[in-house]
Image 1 (cartoon, rainbow, N blue to C red):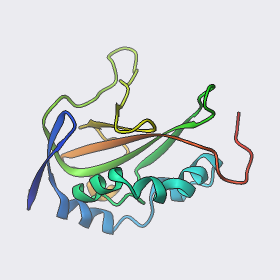
Image 2 (cartoon, rainbow, N blue to C red):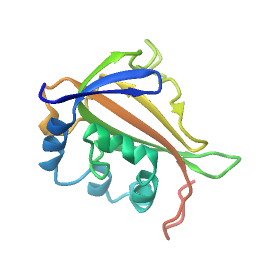
Image 3 (cartoon, rainbow, N blue to C red):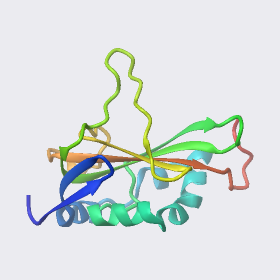
Length: 161
């Protein structure tokens, strides 16, 4: 790798090439949520800048990740008590996890462990598997940063049930 940066992220240590990651994102025209017209993605995009204005955005920037160019955004529905929607956004950076276990689905069940909480509404998981990475990342060692967020429904379209 080029100019590697080593960072501690909660219980992981990663070594990334932030410059190579930035260069890869520079040729990705739009993120997955921006190419989708569904209301779930529109709701994510409407709140993304505010979410990424805090510490999670600063972390993505350190890794060379452009927060507007997610590989995938998934919405898992509302929480019954709060009404907030559970989202995940997946981002990639060129590098590797050098300490701490990558999060992976449980064998046989596919159940993914819960994210490590950063705040009461935002969590993070790191893994070394990224089948949905943008084309410029193909063939490179990657760290996938999975951001989980509990967000309100703010767009004008009625929330799906």
